[in-house]
Amino acid sequence: MPSPIAPPGAQDAPDTNLNTEAQRLSGALMRVNHVGEVCAQALYTAQAATTTNPALRQHFLHAAQEETEHLAWTRQRLDELGARPSLLNPLWYAGAFGLGLLAGRLGDKVSLGFVIETERQVAAHLHSHLTRLPVQDHASRAIVQQMQDDELVHAEQAEQAGGIPLPEPVKGLMRAAAKVMTTTAHHI
Image (cartoon, rainbow, N blue to C red):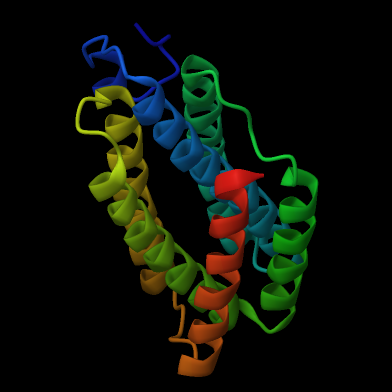
């Protein structure tokens, strides 16, 4: 049974014996999700550092705290699956921090727009993981579902705070960068 740091659905998930292939797939998908949470920490930290608006800084720091829970959940699940985090986590963090600084320097509305698009893309990515995770891996599925719900709330909050839509070419670049990260993190 997972420890209490997992979300409620994962705590209550029945203990399931996964075969080697299912365990390997779940581990790889949770490694990718863990990398996403490493990046979320970097993004929100950089965006909090660049805004001059104290309320927005608190918003970013609060979101980073929620993402810290996701980071702990995914790391815990990696350990339970006998999988390891990405060996490239320092690189992912540095790259995401740089993107967060850039978004923040472009102004609060753009920075919030970056949050909106990032969280929507992450939610779509998490939805795809729900379709790929073994059906018997109840704990991983509960974690991913809760993360997806939380990411959509972050996007909505950023929109309500005044975020503006990003141009389509920027959204496309974000999708391409995410594809490189997720494909690499699946293995490394």
